[in-house]
Length: 370
Image 1 (cartoon, rainbow, N blue to C red):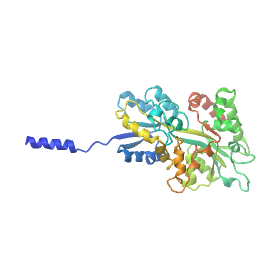
Image 2 (image 1 turned 45 degrees about the vertical axis):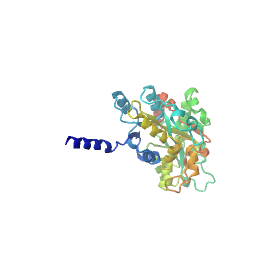
Image 3 (image 1 turned 30 degrees about the vertical axis):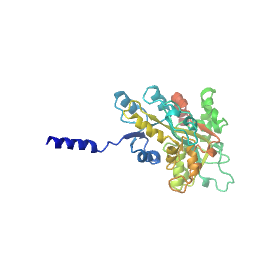
Image 4 (image 1 turned 90 degrees about the vertical axis):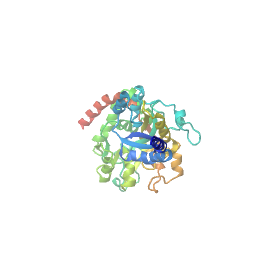
């Protein structure tokens, strides 16, 4: 009897199913997370056998900090703003990377550090996507006109293009766009805001002139769907917004609007690897795939955010039409496409982290005076 039990025990040990490795990825939900899941999460899961779980959150480092300090890390990879990668790195909450060692080179051998569109804000951040604060217009708002808006200056030209504009409810993006429209070069915007006397006042004055112009006027938006809705209804003739939302309105909803990329602000999202996790190497392997050339190109099949890898654009261009509908050519929709980056601003998170209170007070005072 004892021999029978022993044999049964050995059989159960040798033939028991192996536990499936799992990696928990934390992101923002909605169409964005869906693009991550379908673009590189599911392909990596199929390729590696590692189960990828997607968890929604509302941002920040509070839960990351709680897990690390308790020594009970259950999250592995987290999608973060630039400022959170800086703070998380300083506090030891995130793993530091050696970019050319930890991440694969581009297909042509270009090191990872040279293949990313922009430098990382910290040693604990690896680039994921870039999106755009740009503007769009309703061509039906200018019947009989021989020209349509093509520059950021046109957004402020109420004589040539009369009608109300819609702008973001907070100061972020508005200040930068206003200064470029006022003649400041895109790469000097933050120097003007930070060091030039009256830089903030100059930007707000430009916006105030637009909002109080009898030929213009301002409508403030806060939700990402509002700009396209305001344009479609004719309440405004132009609106700033997020390129992904404009793309969705044009391609998926059939809204008659046109995007303008001149003077766009490129903003970004990063991945961080949480420190102190028990399966760090498994998570790192997944992160390598996610942020490789092929993985990042995959996400652009489902959403109009640009992959952080320059080489990913080559995959998109070579396999057009790249969008999931099999009809839409995606390269012109990418904020980082060569045609869209002739005149752009790279969002400076440090400026907003350092000046948020002062700028916010000045901005709210301006809005209350309208």
